[in-house]
Image 1 (tube, rainbow, N blue to C red):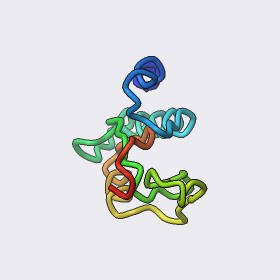
Image 2 (image 1 turned 180 degrees about the vertical axis):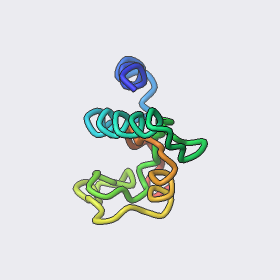
Image 3 (image 1 turned 45 degrees about the vertical axis):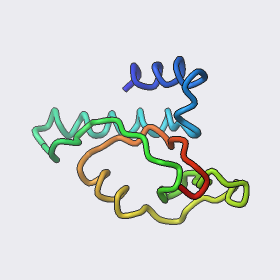
Image 4 (image 1 turned 135 degrees about the horizontal axis):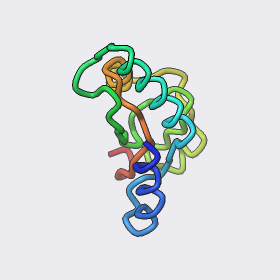
Length: 103
């Protein structure tokens, strides 16, 4: 996961893909799901796969602006279904990606 985060850090200034990066959260989650795999648990094809979510998808406790100044300080109180399902499948959320305002 460190290599993924390093790549985001080095390339994002040029590409402007990620508007929010969650390095600490991603590293913690990656360590947790790696332990699951080492213990023989398999959640499926997304287990330990890093993903970025569009900045319109509600992610509990993570700033979700929908690329609008109106929602500049909006922090959802719950995860959307796609986030819940991704987490259940073992995906590791590394951040929020750029989008058009309100997509």
